[in-house]
Amino acid sequence: MKLTFWGAAQTVTGSLHMLEFGGRRVFLDCGLYQGRRAEAKRLNCEFPAPPETVDAVFLSHAHIDHSGLLPKLYREGFRGPVYATDATADLCGSMLPDSAHIQQKDARWVNRRERRRGGDQIEPLYTMDDAEGVLELFESVDYDRPFEPFAGLHVEYRDAGHILGSATITLTVEEDGRTRRLGFTGDLGRADRPILRDPQTMPDCDWLISESTYGGETHDPPDQAKDRLAEIVGETAARGGRVIIPAFAVGRTQEIVFRLDELTNEGRLPPIPVVVDSPLAVNVTDIFRRHPECYDAELRTYMETDPDPFGFSRLAYVRDVRDSKRLNASTLPMVIISASGMAEAGRILHHLRNNVEDPKNTVLIAGYCAPHTLARRIVERQKTVKIFGEPHRLRAEVEVMNSYSAHADEPELVEFISRFDRERLRRIFLVHGDPDRQIALTGALEGSGFSDVQRPQRGETFEL
Image (cartoon, rainbow, N blue to C red):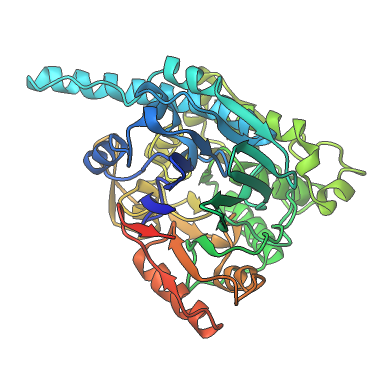
């Protein structure tokens, strides 16, 4: 049995790992690498094996850095099943076509520029047809119900508590008279967050692939983040400014909206408009409403007095581009939540372009930002940031709140991994983390008694 690490190896994007056994080849996730354009183009055009030879993909959740290369895999010949929870399949039904639209739009923009320069034309990474094609391959699976996709492999999904439909994946392989088990955390969520249930304990395994996004970090308590959100909105509105929040359409947007709903019911927000300006986020919020089976007890109790936790009187959801443009023509204080979370594409770029130079405004970064993204440059408070290729002075206030992260922090990761049988767990592979975060988490795990912790590089293969 061989395990090859390909995406999210010593970086926090592009999750993709390949397991080979008994003549079979499967992928764990198939995510889009997000970062510098030239590097992203190169990495997103490579797979660890010919797509037509891949028997199945096991998808942990719908975030584009975990699912966004599936249309490319389909485009190059993959026709096997993609296993995912019902909620993940529903989310991908909106997110993958949206990603294809962005790919095609970006290609048109680059080609217009290159025509003026006399340069070469490019093809989009994939098209809407590719996204729609791979969606036909999805097969829904339930939490806590092991299944056998083919002889010699048993798979179990359990709730990872990261975003709607997210799962840890455990693969039990029978080969050459031996039974061995590999666990994959996907992206692991946090306990005691609103909306979703806490991460479930995984079955004991022989090897574990674990995310490491926040190694060395400890998040603030969720209630403290709610209080700080109220302060930021109040202080910015008092200056006559706007709060601009780049937020992932899945998970982050809904959690922030829920907290604003709570604060509105508590009378703790100024009477200003709150706008979710993202067609994808609007679609995703509708999907959240369709999957109450994923809600935790806190949200179910809350809904006894407020049946719509994702809507209140001053909240508007915007789909139409003309309504989006009107927001930037207005001078009123307001809160604008818009995708994407890394501020690399979408309507958030227009809102940032129109608001970052005004010191009355606040840009609120509510989660992890990968290196070389606009959101990371804002977090670093660079004096000038480029938006649509043009320099803009960053004069707005910048607030960073990692407590809204959907990822477990270091103490939460160590606690989760410590539930495994230490005598059985032979090795831990850390993925989905920058090198310094992985080094910190390695030290914490070794301090907790785990002796074999690896930080694989892209393309590195291990015999299990």
